[in-house]
Length: 183
Image 1 (cartoon, rainbow, N blue to C red):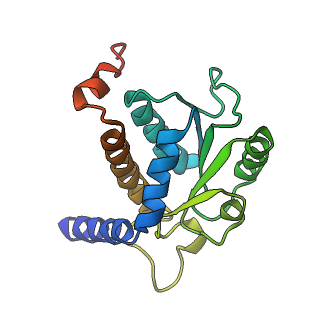
Image 2 (cartoon, helix red, strand yellow):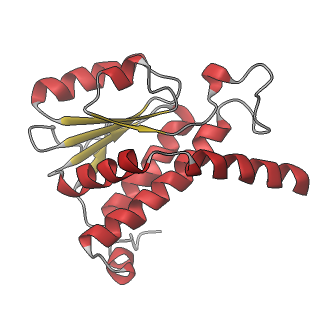
Image 3 (cartoon, rainbow, N blue to C red):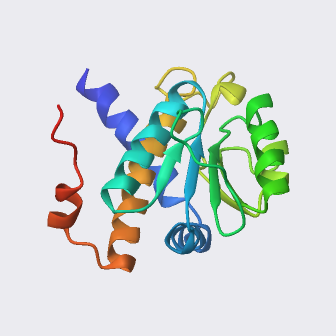
């Protein structure tokens, strides 16, 4: 068991190390200047995006998950963040089209920067990790299916939150004050 955990953590570490600094910094800049942020992802990627939305809310940013009844419309000055690990999903492409027509900026987080979703984005954050689109063959991760991408997303998103927190000068106490008391 410990051998597998060492290997899984090492693989996630390689993914994080290989994220381009300029893409990471551009992502931080886009998040900090956005008027409102809408976020979307499917499956386990969607769970990671929900975690990012929660932390952005804790930072005091105006954000919402696409599909929630309280999600406002997007417009100029807003940012749509979508995850499309394997390159594209039909829902992601449709949402990109709607957001683009409304004047919002588009950030695609993906393991496939040559994919359809990335080609439609204003900004791409490439997470160089295996997804279900490429989980067969000799370069298979110890983690099943797209788990390497999803695990790297979790940690990358937490690192983004730290960078945004520092850029906006938000204290850990201020973040905690935004945490729900209805648990």
